Length: 367
Ligand code: OSB
Ligand code: MG
Image (cartoon, rainbow, N blue to C red):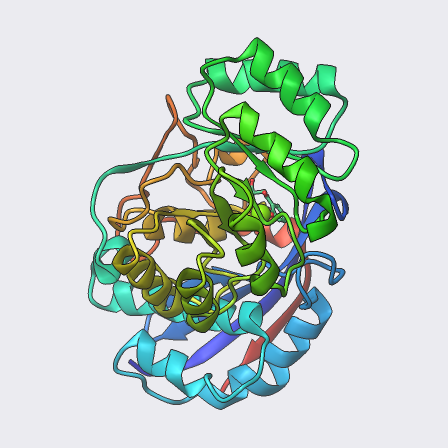
């Protein structure tokens, strides 16, 4: 399948509610939107990097530049028989996994459309809907209790609470007391160090399904030490940017659950490899999110239909994030289940009119 042309946009959408995690607050979502063309077909993907390197190292401006000056010129006018061939062509580059994923994911969508099959089929998944939970940002405890009640009532299958140093045990006590049966997890986004082991060990009393990324973003080794000291499974997010990171984490028992974000791991080929490796280690995975708009959200849903995605993901209703999306379809969960968009590729189409109003810049590429 030959890549005949591309369009790279920078898109901005306001968030319905500010989203606060340990490293800061997001009030809007700014992301690269990539459109790849072949014949009359288009493949789409969003980049998941943030404007500032506070979750991982990549930035929106850095990724836009790398895509425009290196990655797109490298693939334009070339034919790739399978998306994994394209992924391999990008392998020599160091880092920049989110930028690479943007290109690779758009090609998966294009490739699936060229075969007239849903992306989930191309990836090896099946099923009409996936289990989803929600990720609740840091807020005063009373507000979080209301939000947990609201989302439990809506049927979400798991509630993930964002925590940080100084906003953890009291929050968990309050939530667990009011919701004794809720399926709860926490995500610390790297707030702690091994010096906080005693505090993290106290989380064992709240029957959490897992503790997500408590320690540094690039430190698998310390997570292995921590896992040997706490009963609750550790789930890694930031630490897993490649399948080699996953291998090291699994071999050292640094993670008993892994959050796969396709946009963070370099694309679907890498996500599949991580998925399969985790399955071989009997480690469950789930699909994380980066507050994606409809294109990224649709990719996540298709990926979540693979068999080892046995825990609810973060791919909750788009209306929780945006009053209006850049796609024509509505991606809304019902009773904790997110339907898989139907049709070739990711199964969603751009709302060109609204997209135009949300577009900050736009660049066309030809071979
Ligand atoms: O750590 O999983 C994370 C959002 C932005 C950056 C990092 C994370 C998150 C979330 C939200 O947890 C997931 C979502 O609702 O898309
Ligand atoms: Mg996380």
